[in-house]
Image (cartoon, rainbow, N blue to C red; front, side, top):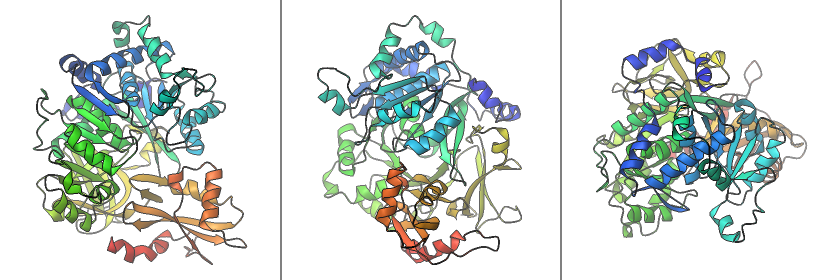
Length: 570
């Protein structure tokens, strides 16, 4: 199925015409910008990661080779390429190479395991998977080799050796490479000696309204949904970020480009935050991104002075960790001017400490979804009270809060809806599933919020059964369904419990069968069932019975009420 066909099944052509004619969609491709920067800034740094620093010239050469290499192994416009890689340069190179030849990138966070990946693969049908041999002690390549036995549509598995593997494999025996897989260097060599020239590659160049990215997110059922974005939508998301978060921010000295910022990213590129603002934004502006594949606040504050980092973003735990670094005043943080804090509202004590300890850095709130990118954000000039909200809508987009009658309200809690140029092209499941999420032209976010008269929103909760742990959505129903297989679990409900550092953690309420299981027993069981570790509940409450609706559904809001006092204290 072509990328154009993907798009046509989910988004009406009227929207394309309207937003293109109004100028809201810029009708440009990221690849065009990269061609410019690789020519003008060939010797300047573009990526710093665990492998070292890569220049724009080196990036351009690798993109050229990998785009041709992908064509050699059968990738064509509309082909889905799944990337499960840490924050390494190989992710960036492959994603841009896919953009260039019209393929559809499916970014996947490195934390996902068999259960989640099987569902994603069955929905997205990737032809090629690019992954690491191992990451943080887990053998990703071996897992994908096992998955290939069930996912016959995956015809090629490309494996990137970690820096540790490259060090230990001095003889080059490639014992780390699963049978039937090819190495990253094999892919690059395919491109270097390819029969395709740049003119042939350009024949595959996509249009700005073709789908270029599909990222999975958990919905109200806990099942992954393939969120599709086009080149135009992603370009709008980057523009909105530059116009709001980067307002008044000067490019780094000697950049030679009007918005060439030095950006830091520790959130995974397999999440929309990392993909948009840790990868596409610095590539679009001709900047330099410093990536961490494992978050370490002490390392980060050292990187700020070393690389003159100006801009970073992440969930509240990232900021809280930085503020707790010993002898923070002893580090050179003078260039760090912006931190976008999204995923949960900034707790007042954290923001007040940031104002005290980071006088040169403006901490700004933001809210968004995989479906929307960053849709509301604070402004650099906002006073403290406004920074305790979740911001206001970015240009060309609107948000509103409606009551139970569907009327827009202010200063009252209701359902949050949005519309505009930054919203996604549709869900992979097709038009019917997509349209179920829209009401009279407004997208239903599933969040509850309050909007003030100035248009600033404050997220009050979610109608979805999700826990957002450190900015990562936990698919609650999926974990509950696995726990129900445990012989000691009769009924289970997982709800969000406030957590000072992570924002929220999962708390499992269990009505046992026979002797009550312990939390250790349940998490061991989830591990045996290959459920992603970050999705495991971190607290357990044993109950004799659950509060129920007349129709027999568990009233989760009543379970969450137990944590209200703790929530107010955070």
